[in-house]
Image (cartoon, rainbow, N blue to C red; front, side):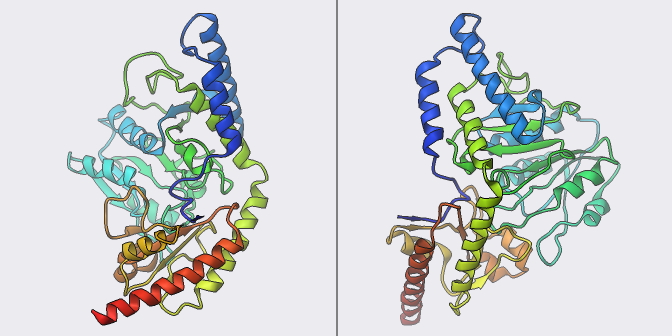
Length: 377
């Protein structure tokens, strides 16, 4: 098997899985129970939260555990809107966001809110100036992701955060899911940030929302004591502890891992450039973990399934997308054909040159086969 879909989800690190199994077997108490088993479980969850906070550069009380980034994004957006119904009905975002941001914002648009999309530059980047142009007296929320999941464009969220510090009634949320464990990120000027463990070799089903202590939100889930009043429910102890372990391991030798992926990216792109049918959509402002490309005369899904038959796995759009058209690719390329025929190859430091060699050779064969089939039809 050749797996090149790491942006969708990553394989679980063996050490992380061992931690999950160990905690599941040996810490059976509810962390909110008052007896000894509950106290032991709470001590473990507190230690994990302390480690997470240190690694992320935030305070322990600023971590809200969730089921993943989709819940975190919805909690951030709806939590702000429900907490401040009289502050304003204007929201700023981009067309490069994940569907778990676009969908709740579409819901709010249908219920009286005004959503503005920041115009991206020719490289798909959001500028501070363009964000500032959209700010109004009734702006309540700005949500801009750190890294786009489809093309890999890195946004200047630190600079945007600095700008928004001048507007104390505006809350700044960033989906940092594709950034954590891959690039360094400073959360100092971000009010709310979404994270998912499955993107950095953790177990699916757990994530968190960073909520700065001066920010208030209304919970999505009410009822029952938990690690925080902002998300009720019995704490998923084994998942939380394993996420803390996954984050620590992901951040170990981060620069070395990044440089390795940078080498792999260059190696792959050099080979893809030799294929005349390929147009590479990712640019110099994208991080190396993603190579997005288009082949306009072949349907993306057809190529994906042709590769799947050879046990090679890539993707078209983000796995959570509900559209056949990539808004992210269009924002970067301004080309509808490229946006409608995009493929995403996502890399890891675990990827090898041999895997990429095999992928490219099979990719060439499938393009040729499908081209011939199209001609015969």
